[in-house]
Image (tube, rainbow, N blue to C red; front, side, top):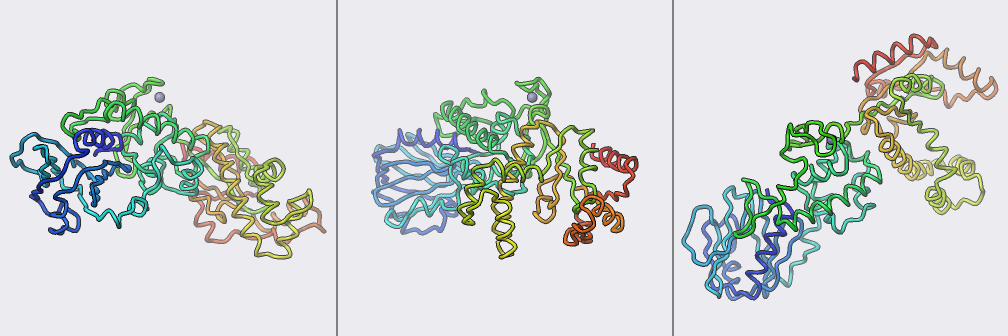
Length: 455
Ligand SMILES: [Zn+2]
């Protein structure tokens, strides 16, 4: 399938040959290739002059005197310019030009299309409103906001033209390899640093490919006279079994979102996140710390929240302005405001959770390990369970829990609001249940059983 660099090469080639040419005749051999075929509209192209050829993502836009032609090349659509013409199979549209040359559209698999518009009513913005921006223009914040909380893989998001335009299968693999990101990583777990890296590498790789005329494989050979060389510069695509250019580990091939995908298992680590959750006082921290003994990588959400309230000036200033805070202890002031107006909690959570999730993504990225333990009290309530690989719910007997809480907080501080049984719904959602009856050896055994299963 032609990708952005190939279509850009075609655009440049066509621009050199078509600008200022006038259409003198049109022959259509397969009407269906013209979207919404209308004979009169087609004939109205005769006499029109090619003023400019543009490209958006993988789409060619021919700007004529009073008409616009938009062409999606589909899987194998190609434009050729011939000096003389006799009909050949799969050539569906032939424009005769005023310098006695011919512009020919060929499409063996017929997935491409040509559409004609009146210039006066055509708007590039509205025609491509479902498309995201190209890597050359998208901002990192815009890109990351489109990935926020998305569970589909980052490879699928790179191919999703509504998120970012112009990246196809070959370049997605190359961009992910250059950014050292596993193609199956969930989009919502991409850190800011990784987002920056993806956009930067996308720009570099697409630009290099454009400079080399795109990539030419058997399945794609662009317009006459345009043959790309970028296939000689590919580092990972189509190289199953060859040594990784960074670390010499053999490159693997897998399928992601139905597409053949190449990656280095060493440079692009497949990080698994094991989340530990449960109510106040059930012994989450004990369970997390046992996991940590084996994986050496614990992310504690309560600590993240506390640190954010103390140190994150973006969050603090956001909260101060949204909630009109005046005191220096914003956490306490917010608590009081929420007590007076319980509806505020949703608004507050929406803001704080975003900061917490971004911080988790940064920490997972920094850890550079293939297993991460995440201790998160509100795992299911925040729906963050959708982004993790395994969830472990810690529970305990109610009598034991009460005893433990009284021991911790004192009889008169015992807070019944924190004393809840996990709903059966939550129990069903969890991948693993650990019943904590204050026997540390038994706990360790249960954790080891899970670790054994996960590995
Ligand atoms: Zn490698």
